[in-house]
Amino acid sequence: MTWRWGFLAVLLLNIIACDPSGPSNDVGQSPFTNHASTKNPHFDLPDIQQNGELIILTLYGPESYFDFRGEEFGLQFMIARQYAKSIGATIRVDVSRNRKELVSKMMKGEGDFIACQMDMADSLTSQMSFVGAAELSSFLDSLSLQLNDPALRPRPHAAWAVRKDSPLLSASLSQWMKEHRQHFSAYTTICVKSSGGRTYTARRKVSSPILNASLGQISVHDAVFKKYALLCNWDWKLLAAQAYQESTFDPEAVSRMGAMGLMQLMPGTAREVGVVLSEIFEPEANVRGAAKYISKLNTHYSFITNADERINFILAAYNAGAGHVDDARTLAEKYGKDPNVWLGNVDVFVLKMSTPQYYNQTEVKYGYFRGIETYDYVNSIRTRWNEYKQKVKH
Image (cartoon, rainbow, N blue to C red; front, side):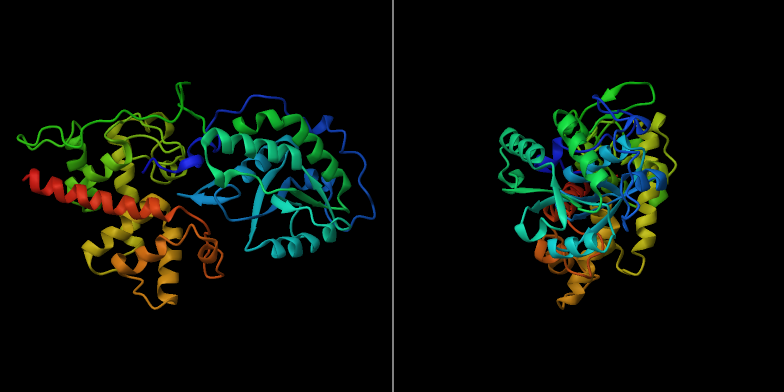
């Protein structure tokens, strides 16, 4: 995968077994669990704890919520998930297309609170309590300065929102945010722990894109690429070009999104293709898993009859997830482009998928993603593959 996800690179979740440090609230010790209102027609804190599920309402966006290769990310989401853990609940996300829809869903009781920055408008104060304004503003402002990213600057006078008729939830969430504000950075930072107990932060060792052109050797892993290219019916040099783009041939690489190994498998993808955590940094297991995943994507896009054209879609889906690529195909067709052709058609809409005007359209199922990364990913691999084919003749 590419390594230019900007501020998202250092912000995101604890992927496997590395719990952030800091205090947590035991459910049994919560000061808000024993005073449920019998008049409340919606769920308040005790109901949520009894039910075991917290439903948050949010928007798609780089710092609120998004999907990447089947994993959930986003600063607001990650912080809310830690709160859910603290009250003994799992978290479910309901994504709206705009703030007006968020308010409508909230007032209908379709979610427990809004976990993205809502303007504290006077017109809403009779219906909602606003929590976490100072904590979120301080965190985002500090992060924006640290990463020199203006996109992270907090909205002025904005906070999360809870219905007025959920006072116990409002009080609990407000207190939790005050007590845990110093841990927001840890809650939103990737931490990958291997089965042997070693903790990996984002890293990779850069190698040359070709080891020895005169001998026709691309990397020390060529035998593995040749073996598993047969599994997905690809040219082994294409698999090698993809591996270089993913990890620069570093079998212990960990991305800032939590992908691991030579082919940068995400934890969920690894499980899907039968690669266990204890072997994810082994080149053969990692490439085997990638080849299985490529085969699945090949089946998913089997309706694209031109095999070379299909490669573009498989690479894009490997990078961003098939759901995001299919969203771009849907928009391409909507705007009169060919949904089965990459260049000048679907790639045009991949580039638009970081723009709210496009990722918030009703036809789009998976919302925001950094389309420029996927666009560059496909182009870079194809360029390197052509170079390999010219320099390596066997």
